Image 1 (tube, one colour):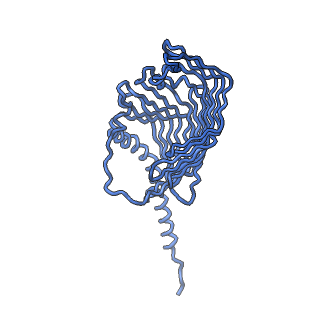
Image 2 (cartoon, rainbow, N blue to C red; image 1 turned 60 degrees about the vertical axis):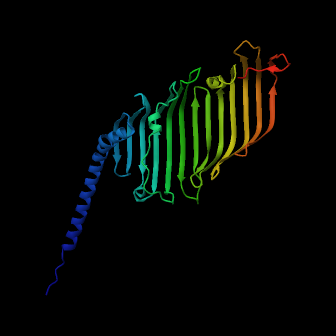
Image 3 (cartoon, rainbow, N blue to C red; image 1 turned 90 degrees about the horizontal axis):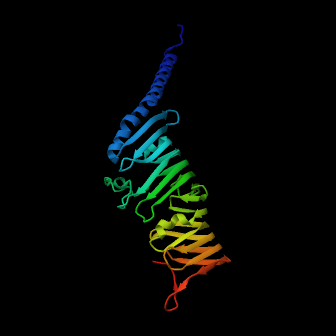
Length: 338
């Protein structure tokens, strides 16, 4: 009797390969076409109805190989129907494990965003309705915190416009561009090294730099910060209620900090603090004769602790300058303070 080799096994393997290939091809085509449609035609209208405001999206795309989603031309309006949030591009790359009880995001990027905050004369924010919306209470809250990991967060060229119409002198400022980089943010207690950096400009001269490490378990942060060339005159709309002065000058602040959220509240320590005032000038806005002029004021070796409300200053240096003031009937110096 002659044994003939069976061809059933190779045929079955070929069928399995063909079926798997067809299924994968259907997944690629279906996810590439259906995911953007679902975002634009379903998710956006649902979000607009839930948030009770107009939301528009120019386009959406989905990469089936990396499971990443890209949104372009997103617009969210405020309570008054004006643009509140706009973004040229939003990129999100979650991981498969996010579907199994953990939140793992490999990368999140926000590019060309613009946010407009305004406070109306009656004190309401332009997103007052959004800020006061009540969320549905959860049925059960897990005692264990959800595992979280964010590999990379990038915010590039963001613009924040702030306008306060409640002040006697209207306040309006633009912070731009804002660039933020954060890496390896997670909820693990074993490795708390999550470096971040924040760089922003206010106007053409003021620079804000902030960098260090941040942790979620426990919620804490440490690092250093520096603010350079801050125009003091721009804060006058908030100072006018307390002092009858016109104040001008440039401010620089720097320091090293640690912050830890404890059961009693946030504990903050400041060290190596420095404050420098350049070309500080103050003149009375009323008829009282008051004038001050200091080319340079430096406060160094500053330390502070909160909530202990402790502060120490190692050195104060004043370079020349003068103060002109009047005396009251009892010989006291009359200061233009309300």
